[in-house]
Structures are given as structure tokens and as C-alpha cells.
Length: 166
Image 1 (tube, rainbow, N blue to C red):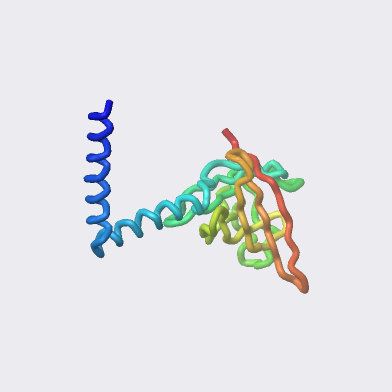
Image 2 (image 1 turned 90 degrees about the vertical axis):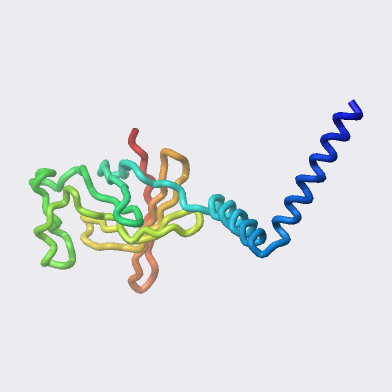
């Protein structure tokens, strides 16, 4: 038993000496810094929000990668009275030149960038015809809080909880 303990202490001392030698050099300190930064980044990284999400109004938004950041496209919704989903147009958009756009496939979330444990970007609401600053925060793997804020005289925000579809 004493022999094993002695061997472990000798091995630990050798390993400790090698680590001290490695991290006493500039390159070793750089490696240690990179490891610490990667570990801290992983803890504070924005969560993966990819997938299909149902809004309280029963619309479905598909969030996937669009280049280097995620974006969300409208893939199904309850159309306004007198319209059909596959032919519905963006008739309430404030910019009249965009009112002929089809709603199916329309990008409604864009410019999403990670900010700690959430995402920030822009969101478009075709029911109201305007875009707003957006914040997306996972409440659980199956629920996401989406907040849209516009600034009129005051900052006005609305929260919704979206449910992830399986």
C-alpha cells in the first residue's frame, strides 16, 4: 500500500512539474487563456433556438441558419377572413410596395445575434404590418419567450411564449 501511494505521489509531482513548465512559457499561458475563454463562452453562449415554433395565434415559425445567424420564416398561420394561407399577401405592411408579398415563407425574424443567454434582432408582425426590436429567450427546451418592442413616445413591448413543435 505504501509503495502504491509513493508511486502516485511521484507521478503527480512529475505531472505537476510538466504543467508548471508548460504554462510558464508564453505559449502555455496563451493556451490556458484560450481554454478559460472557451469554457466561459460555453457557459454564457446563447442557446440553440433552431426548430419550428408555434405562436399563441397558432402561426408556425421555422428558425434555421440564414448565413452566419439564425432567422425565422413564417410557414403556416391562420389567414385573415376571406384569404387563404397559400395566397395571403402582406396587405397590412406600412410600406405599400411590400403589400403584394406572399406571407408563406416570409422572413419574420432576422438580424439575430447572441447576447449572453438570449438572442436579439428584429421581428415582423404581419397582423399589424410593422417590425420591432426582438429579444428571444429560452424558458425551457420547449418554450421560448419572444419580446417585441417599438418606440413611439414611450417604449412599448409585448411578450409571447412560443412552443417548440416536435
